[in-house]
Length: 242
Image (cartoon, rainbow, N blue to C red; front, top):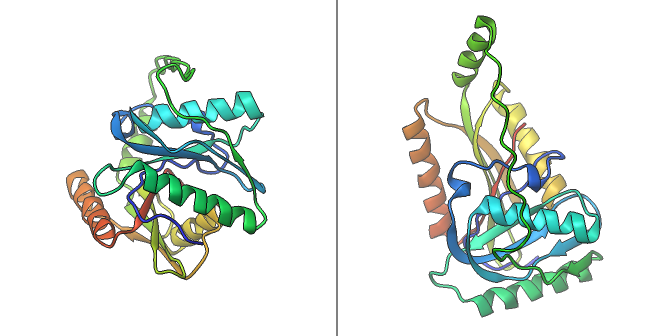
């Protein structure tokens, strides 16, 4: 399946968690200017698309707004994912053309595609997050349990697909902290990507252990994504937990 080759950053929702429940803090809460597009996630035959549009918005805000639109207008509650293409080296017209080609391929493959015509705006109807109540004081045992969690091994998972035309797509996780064995983690990651995205073509997936320190981990993540960018891969950043 031929897809456009450009950098995208996508928040996808893992194991039944809707986009409206995505985290509201961190890097994904920072507005980014670029060319955005959104699509529904889930295992059904129907897929919903937004427009490809120009906006300066955070990943959290646009994903949340798209998911709310799907729920209200189409009664679709499995959530959505949104991605941004950097404006460097790509035009909005090119991305729209690539999107139309992708939609045609999906329909030829038997998928039902609904073009919603939606694009993000300041009045997209995003509800304000409800403040979380202050958690009660934790007993020493709970505090010790949390402390031990922070010492768990950290991994970054990656799943690459090469189309028949040679275009490369890479699905990458964030930093995953878990006690799950590396082999089992890799298997769970591969199954999640296959189930959620059904990527065509030759593919490889793996989860690699990162260094212990936060700064070193971030450096490893940035280096890996720089390598993918230099190879003109289309990058999907997936919010996934085993």
